[in-house]
Image (cartoon, rainbow over all chains, first blue to last red; front, top):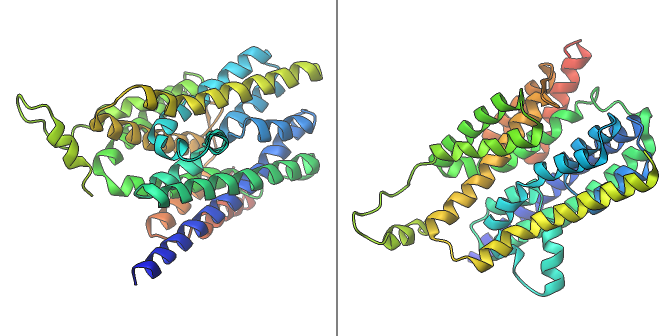
Length: 242
Length: 106
């Protein structure tokens, strides 16, 4: 009975990872087509997708290079966008530091929005690792195949007419919903962060505005009020209970 | 831009991104953090993800997009809230945006 339930949960995780990978592949097609249509040689989006493997940073980098920005400026902007991988990595340290050295090195490269969101939706331990690896590896394959396809198709593909630009935000929203549902305080913080980032993005560069969304954490508050004079260790232990 | 400059730019961003990805677990290994901080870190990942949803859904390089894309994301979000399958969420979002554009909505 218990193992049947576990098999079912595993199947659900793999199914979600597969869908995330498929959707990522579709977004990859859009990215490849947009980059080549903007004037970059086809090998640039393809190499970027294998070596950088981070959708929004790639979009920004390609966009800036196409618009004639200095390479150093474009690279710096893309790295600012990728700064969010530091908190991702901290939140998933147990997953990234599990297993042999080659496995750990590969795990770091697969740290993306989708694998983070899917893994955080799992309670921890083996289910969390499964969600992370399934989403990360699946997405690595589909993303690169998608970008390759889009780069070769290039100008012949009208991605906005197909509504593909709505696919990535919708995918991320669906993936992050379980974490938002689980904790009202996190929901509050995320909403506040979104408002701050939106307001700032009208005046500040994209990466900066996204990071400024972290100000929303001020709305997080404390789940348990610390006892006066106590070390707080009891409150911390209580948080590990579901 | 020369192919070499393009290559160097892409490889620099790749190396920098890998370093950023490695920084999180590196910090966690070296610094003992209280459980309340762990909650803060998890929350910050969720906050950043939602921020990305909103900015990618409403903006293109800092300027607001037409209503078709946000409408698509909204439809996808509502379906996800009703616990619809992920594939349906993504397809409905793209289809909504595509349909609206077919009707002339930017």
